[in-house]
Image (cartoon, rainbow, N blue to C red; front, side, top):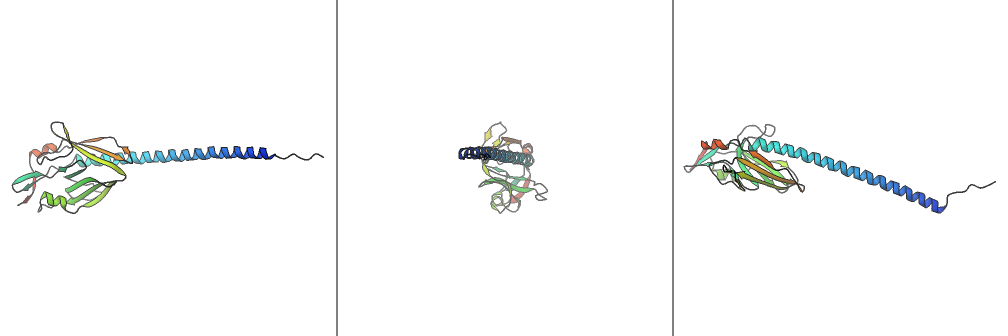
Length: 205
């Protein structure tokens, strides 16, 4: 009677090696699939953020109120624009808060894009209103850079807005999130022409 022949040590080692190679290929495929899924989810989230922020900017900046204040006999536009922040008079969506108009402030705080708001106090100067306490809302997180440019009626762009009587015609917003630049946004300020007729909202001696 012949005895059955078993596997040699070399054959067992080769089988184990093949099995390990198969497992490595499968694990690599799973990791690649997970990375692809995460990348797709991140892209989807960022696309949703871009759409939401773009709609917000369109709604906010196209409806800026060209209100002026009368201080020491001189009327001044309640609008102050810098490279990385903007104060203006406008409205908030009803899901945030009702009423208005509000004094609004959009700016970057650390890695967050913020919107602040407060009721404009017509017994105080514009400067005191800007220095007062605001309520905060976080618009976007993981923001690397946020900047605004302002278009004059001569179609030139400025990094700040010092004109106390006229509104810019357009705002150009540049934003970068998690190292990825967003598409540049240019929003018309439809109310800029209304500043031809000053609307005084306060009088401060």
